[in-house]
Length: 252
Image (cartoon, rainbow, N blue to C red; front, side, top):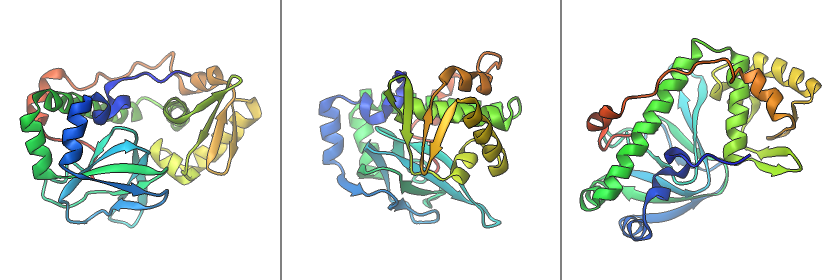
């Protein structure tokens, strides 16, 4: 399965020229995080943002009633933690490495100075943030018109597209995500996940193992996702650019 190289799959880092990447690197420092390591905690004082040059992370939100939810995944090229610098200075989520992560850490003021001195990079940043906001809005809109089964199937297909390894017609995905976390990402329940996984294994759509799964029948899983019948909500309009300049949506 080929990855669609949209602005969000390429990420902010991937849209920069080599010279721009060099200038941004000079404004920060690089740190490596092993799987399971925390990049930042919810509630921490926010002084900097992260640009993921390689690797992937999960965004975790602790609710007021003590529940922990995985609300998003971010990967190669993504910028995270930019919102906290604009809205009060506290991290609104915890960020944890899934794979080995190489992150460029840049203080907010230095990042804003970089955007001021690199108009092309600033424009790329705004485009990426608008697209991310639009995708987040579309996912929220889909909750009211799709079932948990459909959202779960679509999540597996998305993970396969972004992180899968295609071998002999099958797509293998190794992710350090529990079934509880997968259910949270799909905005569904653990019982629904268990029921659908059992059904899809029986039908030959998928195979599952500890922290990994294989898509055997992509078309069958697409049918389960209802991708041929669901009309997606429109994403955010382009004129919103003026309102989101230098703002992000990762919420960490």
